[in-house]
Image 1 (cartoon, rainbow, N blue to C red):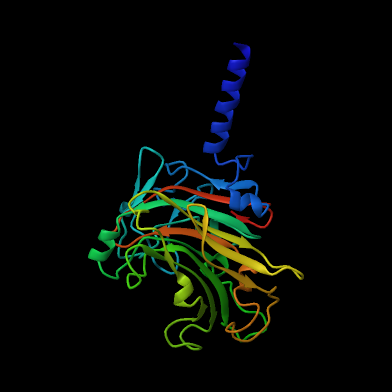
Image 2 (image 1 turned 30 degrees about the vertical axis):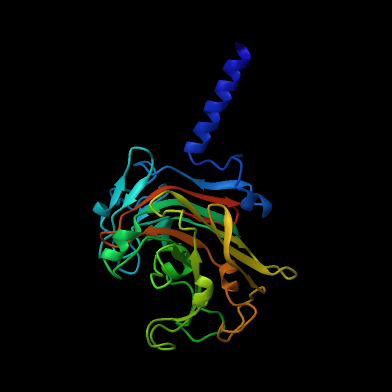
Length: 316
């Protein structure tokens, strides 16, 4: 009887540590373990203790309403569910961005929340109805992505370049935005953005991204997007002797092609054709973002981050 009670106590303590988002020894997914990412640095249910539902702007939350670049997400588009999941309804004030792991702040860092650096495996468990996306056209779609905190806080100046010349990374783990490919496809992309806004390139920043052939991710027709699926991104930084690597994952299996880059040391010149293209990722910190378009609800059951260390994360 004593052994049974002890085992039960251990199990309850483990569940408590898990739910409180502590970085303790939960078993990492195989892809994270293989990369040496054994620390569960981010794992949390969506509830009023983890989501800044009142837009208080206080530190200590895991998720905030997206509020960068003058785009303020509608709090009514974020619905916390009793099972610890969240349903994002989308709105026209912040397309594809309702929740983020950071928010603007009047502090030295320029934000509160968390941004992840130094390599990681990030994964979200998501479901949505693809038929709803088609009904609303191209005004937004289910999206699980990230931007460099350096860009969100206007601190992405490219060293050695003219004033105002930006260089920053965007990682799109899952975007249901490739309808031309077919209903059982989604998009997963890396964007190496650079230049002076609407000067170097007329539309916005210049975008050295993956070609469309590498972006569209096909899933089996039996894998319904209306069921929960895990969408992951593996990031291994480059060193002087080892290339940086990135790969997208669907339900724990690699999809698309592995992306590699040489160590980036603030070299000048456009990223196109350079061996260090995408290497700016290793110098920056990812703010995780969840969102969708109007009339295309997306439900998220969990978001996890696995790392070898939390030492290069930014948290305020």
